[in-house]
Image (cartoon, rainbow, N blue to C red; front, side, top):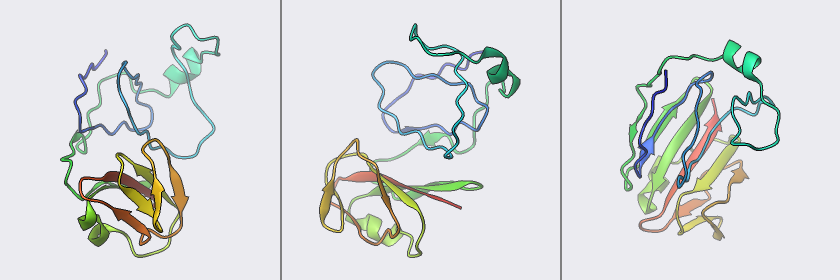
Length: 152
């Protein structure tokens, strides 16, 4: 019943709602999700937090569920990884990313995946996540990578 996947650098895995998942040691991940104050915890590595076994299993898909969006993200690729129905997720790379940026206003979330990312000339570091209304203020240096997410 477990769909074990050995993660590699550049993997993109789209887990639909209701997918039971866990993260192994040594991974750096970006988890994009709707702003919902609800998490069902089935196991918690001996931490003293409440588990939600019955409620969690009631809304879970217990069979492996690969998604057609799963795949590899090439480091220098500017491409839309998710196009709805709830959000869009864009992988940005280098100065060429400027041509892929949305021109409309929205509630964007910008997440650097490396150094060399700026918003309106200010550095945004790996590990930070910035909310912005306009994407045209984003600039990436050569070799820099980031994610941009916004609601549909």
